[in-house]
Image 1: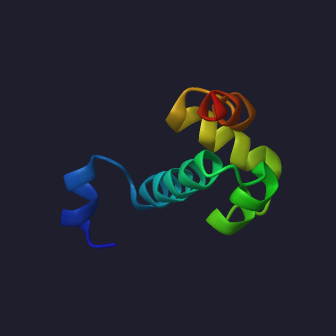
Image 2 (image 1 turned 120 degrees about the horizontal axis):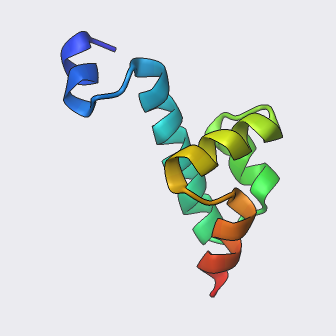
Length: 71
């Protein structure tokens, strides 16, 4: 990613990529996709890495987020 783009979002390229993946997973969880499927489709190959990244950006674990999205 070019530096000007990374500077625009105030995140290093790897963190920005993780943010995009987490946002995609959030959308999938809101559509009632299973957590493991949402994580894999978003590009996370390790469940613990997904949970840590998700909680870091969203402020809740994927399980808590999915439960709140279901109402």
